[in-house]
Image (cartoon, rainbow, N blue to C red; front, top):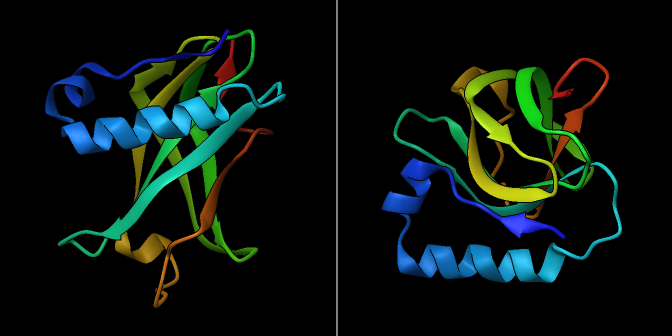
Length: 133
């Protein structure tokens, strides 16, 4: 059965309203019949450095731990890829059957500026991306 976990720094710093939103998203998505990696959107924003921040609930529905080493992530809005970046995140490891919130940061030159970034979808390109050991 899928479990919700928070990385230690998220667990300490997360505002109550944000924790509730994540718990609601988890309860609505934890029973999806899927055998891979799925990203449920939480929010999108542009920060002071003009980087695109994409916060998602990462669902590892597989039977293997998920790590991000040269993981290519694509962010699409209305079917058009607007951000594309390869991530190596040694501190991010998601156990089997665990969902964890995370924010992926696309620097200013790795995305196409838009008037709106909402209703997008984050996807992982599995051919060269994450390790499921």
